[in-house]
Length: 110
Image 1: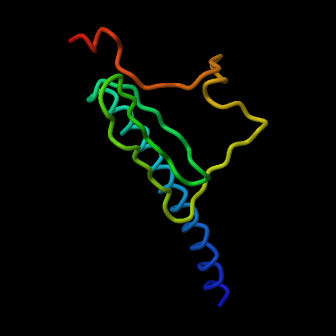
Image 2: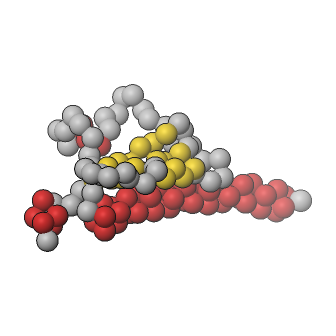
Image 3: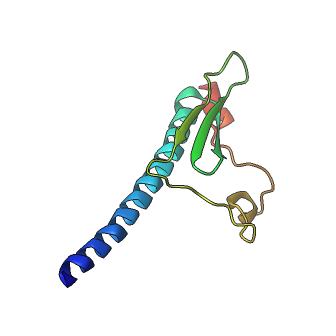
């Protein structure tokens, strides 16, 4: 029974770790997808964290009607949290505005 109890406790920890890895993979996938959209469609792409478990990707077009935003929820009850004491990525690098993935002006002309 002792071995069974240890195995059950270990399984719970492994399950939480697997869910966290799955959520991290979903986030990385959305960021890569946003970068690929910016390159392939030659437009700016905005990634927003909506609520506590959704990631929204929006194409920003200069002309025409862009497709609707794509919103993906993190699976398995995973959530993210912003800590007020830690700066976000743009401010950590001296920027006060959002970071955009975009194609360079030279690439747009080609």
